[in-house]
Image (cartoon, rainbow, N blue to C red; front, side, top):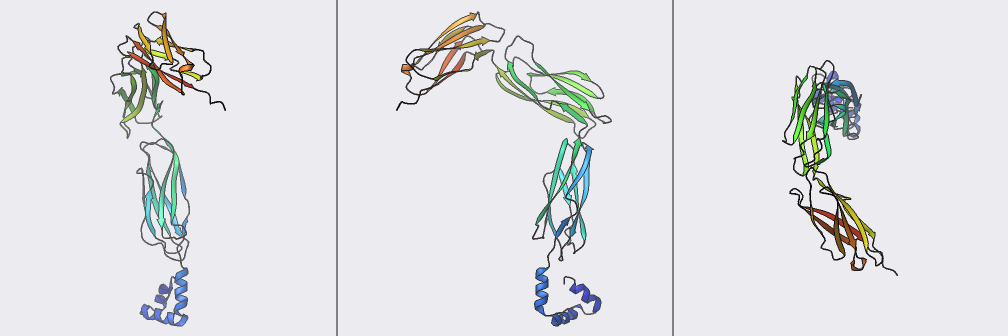
Length: 348
């Protein structure tokens, strides 16, 4: 019924309006109204996912997805929405007549991407039973430059340590036939040292180390690798380190568990100096009246035992306290030891 106008124009080429009125009068307006109400478009996607296989990084992948109208009314592509900025899509907004097809052109710029990728585009239509369909490009992007590891992590760096600085090696491998080369590498922080170990047409290696004079706390930086001949001129490798002081309490916190009975309870912690310079413990103290402390030197300037004594009779609630260790270290004049304990439930 959708093609009434076209059929009548073929029969009555000189008077389409008159022919239409004649046709309606013959079959009745109710029949025409019912036919138009039942006519609907139907979006049919021949192929929803296109596998582009394996491509080199920087390749722009392009594919035309075919949309067919399987209904009996005009299908309209109202909007095409890519999921991210790296993907583009275009399609005509002209109606697709029943039985006809239209291409939705989708492209994916793989610059800056590597590994398995799945990129989608949502197509909105006037098909009330299927208002939107998702088209996808999937495949593997093979980079010209592979960096291992992709980040450099130092779990612990001891400030002022006499030991040689820990080094980690970053390897840059170039894909065979790639028209790129590594030009060098550097870091921004003055406390991070990057040294070149090897460089050839196929591979480069750099060592990364943290200066033991770095300030205490977290150190965050990045290693910038220069690349010539590719779409990307640099590659960034995050660097993270935790710089700790040369003094360490082992364990770093002390638990008395369930506090029972009336006798004094004694626990011990070790204070270790991991630095090159000797230290002296000046005082160990606690503000909690239930806790008393003492210290004993095991190895001059290097190792100490801190003794913590608890009087259960003076503990009125679950124990949350601390012991402060005072030293003559200019970097760590004070260390805090957390103390925990719980009282048993009241008897019934």
